[in-house]
Image 1 (cartoon, rainbow, N blue to C red):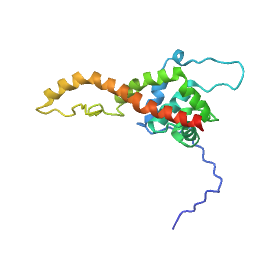
Image 2 (cartoon, one colour):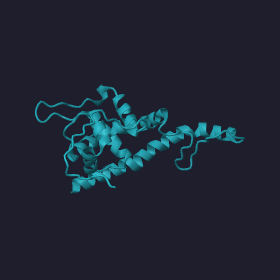
Image 3 (spheres, one colour):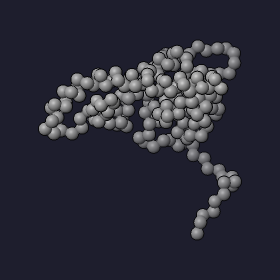
Image 4 (tube, helix red, strand yellow):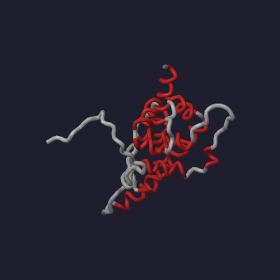
Length: 192
């Protein structure tokens, strides 16, 4: 026997206290952005026009969408409409920012430097929360040993010596991959 299914039936099911699961990346993003001092995020306010969206909310939207490989402003705005985790990150906002608002925010020079600075801090925080494991991280052939065995003393020195290089490579990876994808998505939007 099948259950009765209809999507035209009006139901009143309100889940007002929904939160993502315990080890979801949204918690790390929210914690990271909320830990930024408010003085670093203050923008110029204007007396006329529509009130601006909170900078922390826009930053959370960008970081979450980048973690889901969504770089287009339209895709980010669509995620804001459809994705439950993105709605949770946005907070109690009724209207979703338009793709133009998102693109203006992320191409602002202050935002670019802020996101670049947060990239390394974000990886460090994910490691401290246990969401990623630093014991075996590979970028361009650099590896960190995981288990103790008779060769550990050889790998340990190599890992300790190459960890600062790994951080630098991580920053370069950000510049090459993520920022180029974002600039390309913004360029395509401007051309359309």
